[in-house]
Image (cartoon, rainbow, N blue to C red; front, top):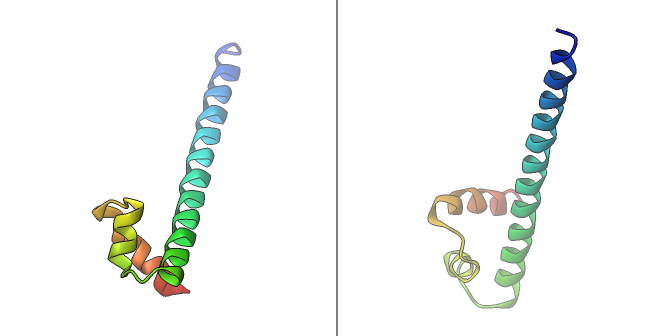
Length: 72
């Protein structure tokens, strides 16, 4: 039992590290994409959908970015 416990703890630590890394990566990606969208909208005469087309944002993610842009 004592041999299994350290392995169990390590598995839990590895899983927590992976989940944290994925959350940070997702949050950073959303912030960067929001920043790009704002820059495109402020410098080029495009609609929001046109800017999202330019960045290749999938249809499934567009409502989230529309919401994020309304918050500012």
